[in-house]
Amino acid sequence: MAAVALLDALRAVTSFTPPAVLPDCDLGLFADVLEAHGLAPLAAYQLEHTRLGAGVPSAVRERLLAQYQGVAQDNVMKLVTLRNLLRETAEIPVVLLEAAAYVDWLYPHMAFRPLGDLRAAVRGADGPRLVEALRGTMGAAPRVEQGGRVLVLSDGRISLSVQEGLWPGGPEDAPLFERRVAYRVFGPGAARPSPEDALLACVADQALLGLQAPLVAYLDLRELVLLRPDAAYVRERARALRLSRALHGALALVAHFWPEAADAAAALDPELAAAERLAVRRVVDAARDPARLRRVRGVDAAARLVVAP
Image (cartoon, rainbow, N blue to C red; front, side, top):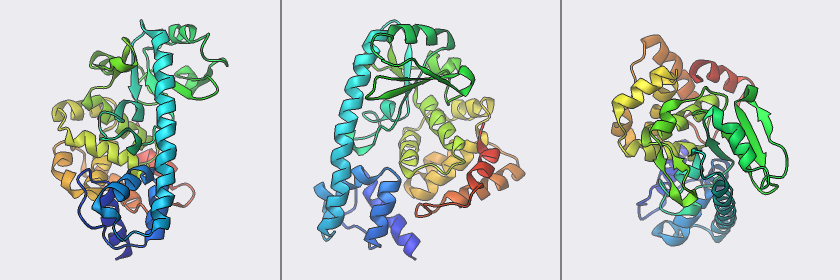
């Protein structure tokens, strides 16, 4: 019953049209889970600016509010710095990934979603051009990771990871660049992924974590699913990218966490063999409890063998 109460409370604070009353739950555990899963800023706003906050002790609200204020400041700093960097790369197509692409697209308020690490994709041939364009701006030489498919650049304040495709270390992905959507606030060469490619990039990131991703990543996926992207394209691309099992599992978790998204998630569900569905179901079952903040050693690695591309 405690797990059900906690999940009901998490659903309430992660709704962009929250209910009038916060469901009863262990508020100490509630705050711990919100912080661990990147949801504290969103919850703080909901508790301060909607009726959900009525009756919530001030100690809990102040704890979450500190997270909100810190994320708001950190996000502004990172976005301004990123915009200044990308102005130096105006002739190079750069596709922003993860939260930098989502924060003003999927969320009503910029401080609802921590940006975390900044990531972007460029075509392989454009990697050296990007490094050269940023040579005078980024102090240290770039660090090379994932067999040369990822460059990590830093100016001492932020780090920018640059990869060739949908996920770190993955192959260059032509449709990601062909279907990109201009994001001109960051400069003439900047773009965000199409809704379909953003969804698949999100799923790929979760797959690399064995679907044991923070709940805020599934909140991203919920909003992308609710955009009703082209289902045929998503399923076909997932098959080509070896992401079908990860897509099935991630959609099952979205439907579990937020039942109102279940129909939209089901419309995107790929075809899998019965044995594959059973294997993925076991991974999903291990990820269904957001309060499970510690896991047995090796569980993540085993899950990655099932769902990672």
